[in-house]
Amino acid sequence: METLKSKPDEKAQESLAVETFMSADDLRNYMTEMQMAKAMKSVDGMDRAEKARQDLIKRMATPIDLTPEALQEILQPLRSKLRSAAERGQNELMVMRFPNALCTDHGRAINNSDPGWPDTLTGRPRQAYELWRDQLRPAGFRLSALIIEWPGGLPGDVGFFLKWGDTKT
Image 1 (cartoon, helix red, strand yellow):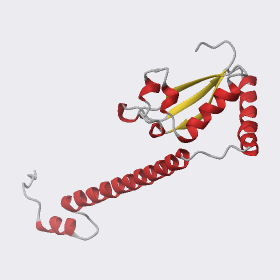
Image 2 (cartoon, helix red, strand yellow):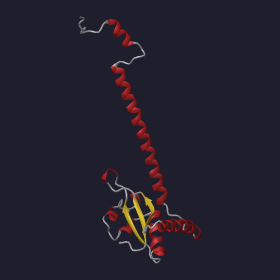
Image 3 (cartoon, one colour):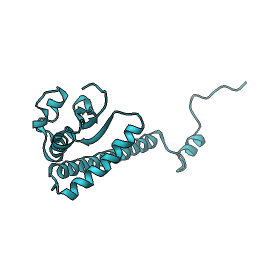
Image 4 (cartoon, rainbow, N blue to C red):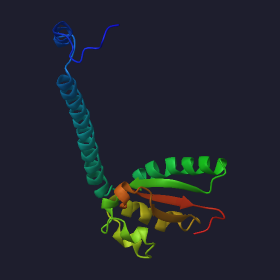
């Protein structure tokens, strides 16, 4: 009967040291490098997403010139979307989504259902509110604003919802 050797023989150790095999340290280093590469990709993606968000905020902070033609370019697709939603039996439609940075208080008044929340709006969200106030409210539409995203537990994007029919609020 053969007994087990407590020490591997030298020939076996040499075969593990050949380049086709990685040592435990090499494998650990490789894994660390791969994790760092994935993290860098993630950080790069987050950087690009943040840049896109900042660009969106900059664009939406600048009001558009609401000429009669521009107003028709906005209202025509809106009518179509409202009609489609009604055909599906819905009685509300999210008509705008924007970063809370376009509110002077970052959405606090909207989150707290403060009656003065429209006063916190800036840029295009302010224009959308005024469009509803001046043209859609007289037609019987209601508008609600809600925080629709909570990144890290903090208020994020705001959604404007047009409502019609027998809905509450």
